[in-house]
Image 1 (tube, rainbow, N blue to C red):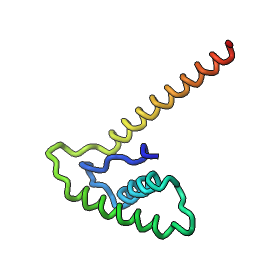
Image 2: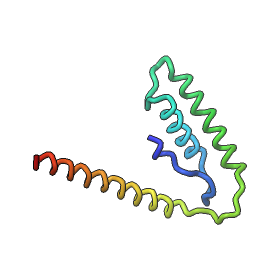
Image 3: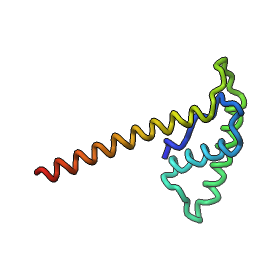
Image 4: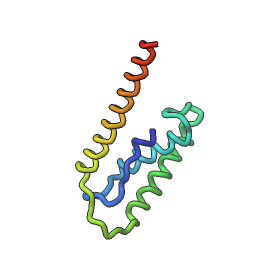
Amino acid sequence: MCRNIVPLNNFEPAATDEECHDAALQFVRKIAGTTKPSRANQEVFDRAVAEIAHATRHLIDDLVTTAPPKIREAEADKRRARSAERYEAIRVFQEQKRAARAAS
């Protein structure tokens, strides 16, 4: 779940409020241990997301860096490549495990 939270600092154009909200939502889901709260907890869940999104927006706006801005698409390509490597490694491992099981 936390792999969905991506760095938001130092992009051109700057991170949007929607991106801050999405990161906050993933964070709250991870902390709460659920992707969808019960009706009894919906209000608390939504309030936490809003507060964390607000704090995230302030953090992103106030951070200072001398590094050149990152290019969104290049960073997304890097994330996709890491994900493909990770899933390929899992696929190979599972294939080896099946082959070992079949051989025994």
